[in-house]
Length: 578
Ligand code: NFE
Ligand code: MG
Image (cartoon, rainbow, N blue to C red; front, side, top):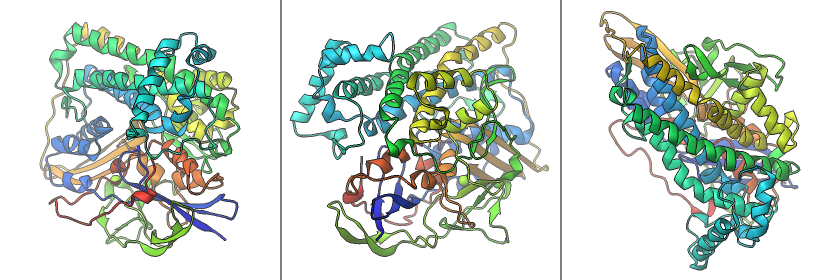
């Protein structure tokens, strides 16, 4: 007999995500459903506004990758108006993107995902002297892993635990059999978990140097940038560089070795190595390091075949809403290209049913309507096919493109962790790919700063002039790569205002529900075949979903523009998991 497991909400992510899976009598996942239960509305708000404001409003799509949507909104309007921003502006935008991606990746692995790999309670039993020695196995210069530092970490956390208030560590599945680090290895990761709190501040400041603040920077404008005084001030450039070096040091001496250790210790854990299910990947070039030169590559890899790199035809990017709480009106099409995309909500609710309760017994509850609409997220498709986006896609596409920056780093990772190439197509590979991408960026990010300094010697331009002709119609888009994968914004301008605006966001690609052909999205496919060791503690589901770094605010980007109450939600703590 099959049983339904519900995890709602998945925490340590942005937004509200519900996962329902169906397991067989051996607790192996047979089917999976990804649902956003959050409703917002930014695409609609941008309509009828001045196009120069689109980026400012679009960045409110998210509180995490605010800058991604800001840059995308500004760039889409520039594309529509035929504006090329000066090289200085392009390079400064790239410095901000570097800062955001590095910030997101380290925060993701430690704050959001780390406790899926690291068992805090085990770390408290570790021998710090032994742990300090073990740290040298993974790097010649371990960070925050000296014996005294590790003792202090242990004391700090055990004092906290003794108070009986576990705080951020409450409700964890400590002792779960799919944790594979030794107590000493857990202590090393725990030490980095705490150290990261300092490092993430430095990374956030890197964006603020050229953005005035972070989150929600303010210095991009259609045509260029406004942070001219910062760009012309050598001390500001040096400040960015010194913070970059601190983050780079953390990536080299903590993040990279910890992921090598995870590769070593989890390589036989079925729930993280069993394969993605869906092995279609799409990624876009990004991270300008010099005029016309990007660190990351564009393209598509189908069925995990990295011997073939397929170029992207952007007309084939479409979204459908068959299983999403929307309708398409005045059209026969099931999928719409984003220039003509629609955002019309149609909520159909939940169904009565039974699922596994926290004690393993069946309980009556509200469940997703598996035959109907079940998510606020749309289903993006490329040429009708679902695709995974994100750092794993960037690495896979980079390998297919023989990208000279990505290939050696990915190869080194596989060698040091002892994993075969096909191990990349898994939860473990997805988590590793984020670290590989971070390493590619820290190895090359200063090229962008050097290119800016060099260009400033002969060119001080920061903004291109332009006019908006109210009698003309325009359309344009931005397609690029942001922390969670390929992002595109699409705008039509008419009568001097935005006529239509659509964002097709990384987490939408990954978290979207089935389409009219029954093709499942990447989250759903990645769970099928996973064996759950204990159905009352579905850590395997959480670990795999966290490996995508979900951002549900981004993927829905819908709300009532007038601030009206649309619906009321009550979260049942019985289903919430850290
Ligand atoms: Ni809200 Fe985002 C990123 C964008 S969404 S975090 O990265 O765009 O997946
Ligand atoms: Mg959208």
